Image (tube, rainbow, N blue to C red):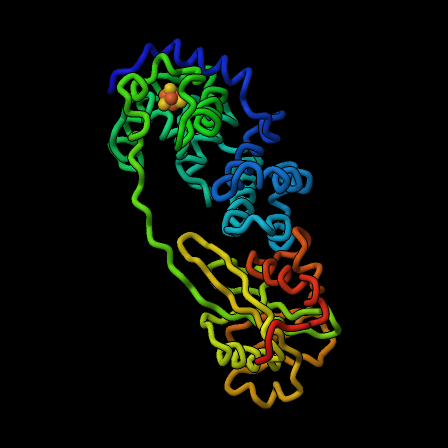
Length: 384
Ligand code: SF4
């Protein structure tokens, strides 16, 4: 275990600072394990500022684990719409149902039971146990890795097992057993507000007198900077098939990513010919090019060329092996044949809005592109 300043004063200083300067976050008001769980799942791939309005809406709609367990998947995805990474919402739903079925509606308070739930890993379990149940468990996220690595002058990669073990050991040395909840949240806030990745504010840090990295002049090199991973460029086309002005055709995804969400018909290529073929498969014809949107998922930098299309009377005849949808039918839900299980007409405003429909992030961006001035009635940026 590395040398470090005396542990009790470090914890005392940190907790006193947290009492004065800790962030006022909605999941910290009247906290319980359910709220901690929902907030931690939302924060996995979302910043605090972005998550707050979604969290407030979600808690109004599903205030308890039992209300969440009763939710329909489509309603839940609509409540999650805009946050992305929808597997998080599906796992919340599955876990809520297991908790009601197997734990009497109480969020488990053992590591073993929590890790058995879908979507809950070591960090989230530690957060629920420590912050939600005030039990002495570590919850080691990136912020806490950095803070503890600097406090103890741990020079290795904090994502690797030996350093992770050392970090967990230091946290357990420092943590006052009855203040696990406040202690872990104080570390999180210190990492977010003071001991930041670049230019940490050491002169105002409440634990500076016990910080080994500061004493040794190693603050800028701990933790070591990760090597940048290469981004992958992906080109796609989307067709916006319109009828009746601003009514657009969307399909429901059935793949592993964004399953169940509504999106515009998409194909993984970039040329106009690909867009034309996609339109034909949807029983439509291209009428113009609208522009493009960009979207990032993990390392994928996606550029989607968007084309305007109209229902084609000849669509049925040109559909080839795939059965194209009948765009003349007035119903809201249409069968589109193999590989494209459902489609429906939705108002452009509904697709572009932040709540209501379970819509993918790319569909929302495309809808907003279509809503820009001069595009509402289908004016295009160029002919095809
Ligand atoms: Fe981080 Fe500086 Fe505080 Fe050490 S003194 S914990 S490096 S902010």
